[in-house]
Image (cartoon, rainbow over all chains, first blue to last red; front, side, top):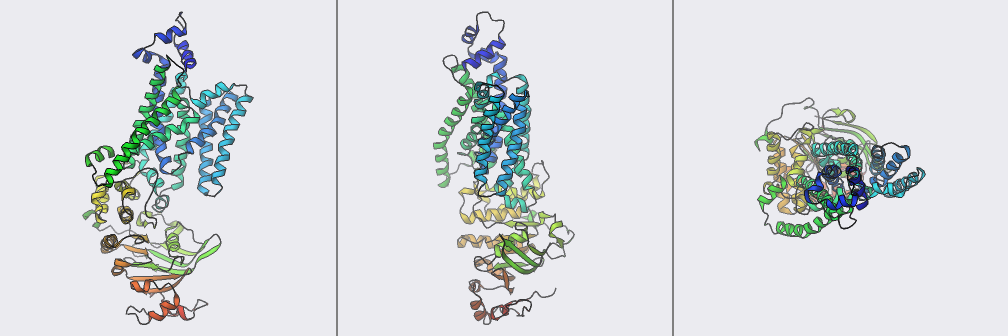
Amino acid sequence: MRRLLNDAVDESLTETDDGVDAGVRAMSGFELFSYGFMQRALIAAVFTGLAAPAVGTYLVQRRLSLMGDGIGHVAVTGVALGLLTGASPTWTAVVVCLLGAIAIELIRERGHAGGDVALALLFYGGLAGGVLLSGLGGKSAATLQEYLFGSITTISIGDVILTMVLAAVVILIGVGLAPQLFAVAQDQEYAQITGLHVRFYNMTVAALAAVSVTVAMHTVGLLLVSALMIIPVATAQQVTSSFRATLYGAMVLGTLTSLGGLVIASFASYHATVAPGPTIVLLGLACFILAWPLGTLVRRRRRLGATNPRLEEALDG
Amino acid sequence: MSVIRTPRTPSPGLDSPPIELIDGEVEIGGVPILRHLDLTVRTGEFVALMGANGSGKSTLVRALTGLRPLAGGRLKLFGTPYDDFKDWRRVGYVPQRVGAASGVPASVWEVVASGRLTRRKLLRPLSRADRAIIDDAIEVVGLAGKAREGVSTLSGGQQQRALIARALAGEPDLFFLDEPTAGVDRPNQAALADALERLKARDATIVLVAHELGPLERLVDRSVVLRDGEKVYDGPCLSDADVHASHFDWLVSHHHNHEHTPDQAHDSHRPHASAPLDCTHEEAPQ
């Protein structure tokens, strides 16, 4: 983190003669937020935090929590292709992720017993291919590591804009098509009988997952992408009893944890090497651990019939 | 309630039978499950599909809803050949699976509201009328006090009723219910019967798969009994005692003494039309 932060500060403060360390030490409180790299990071964190759980809710509902992880593995090949060809790794990752997500959805749709194994093969192929390709391209492991574990503080303006646009698309579709996506994920056969294009909506969720993986790539990194999609949902559903409340709750939690994790990591970086990606994920996990006993309490109260209607209404929006 | 009972405007094909299956055949993995099955259901009829486990009654419902493709035969829904049928909003389905369990909590209201999707435009919020119909559907099945609760916290019978409300919310003309009474206690069965009675009062066509009719018996107009994928009885409602007639011999020996004894006709085109098949009742001409 310190290295990354220093690099970023270096870019922002080229006029500072005292050296980068002095610059980092001088930063405190709100001053940190005045730097361009930090503002870019905060924007990326907000959009990622909103978008990833919006898709994650549908993945959890379909019991496909690990799909984001799988796409994340496939994305490594996409990033490596970008590094190898000199194209933007974000764009190549989007393309490869979409192809991977469609492949996963087709394998899943067939529902064969071997589908599980086929998915595993796809995941490992994606990861190994990515590492191999980036080696061929003469890129060091450190370059790939930026994408594997995230490097939100070195995100470029172009990538911030791309992240914002992609995240906005994911949020608009995820929230706008919520009734249809909910119905298909809740009971696929029923949705089919009522005349919904089940396959189209399944593919939509897969495509949204692919896009949000690339969106979250800069924030928490490909290996931790799934965490940002799943953990806020798991936390929110501890206390909710409706889908809408879970969806919106998870989006709020995702935003708070990615912002909180980034800020904590930034301030902690004065004293130690603290990477924002893992901090965000661990903060999310901490929220889950706090929500767990609360959820047990809520469920017990519900079982006893002592539901608080006002609380329920507030949660259901 | 008032919204649900509003008489619908007549749509084309209203006079055609909701279901017309001729020589239907279904295979699963190459194994024939349904063979040479004819079934016509007229508007407003309440038909109970009965038979032992594995007799093909659930498969028949799945074939009629398009979930299981026909290997042979012709199917018309509301007078339209299946392949051309697009008006799926007229069809409601209540699956056998109790407990629409998913990874994320869903409230009763949300599950029922998903049944309204057939009548909603894309990306449009629910209208006031839509909401009223959803609320009515929940009230009809007696879950008004539980609308905001998670489906997974309900009992099996209540979950089943939530799924019926979901089908109700789409205001279909033709209902398929797959074993709605399985694993449901008597008070819940009675509540279910009340809900179906209201449906029947609005002239909905209902096809019910059942192992046991219980309190639903009084509503049934016609029983169709399957055995090994073939129709072996088609006539007036069989009593609950007859429902256990999963064996041909039993059906035959008791059949003649029963007060509901249907008109009997030989089914000449079936090769093994020996004793048990004597009770096969051909569809009366309309």
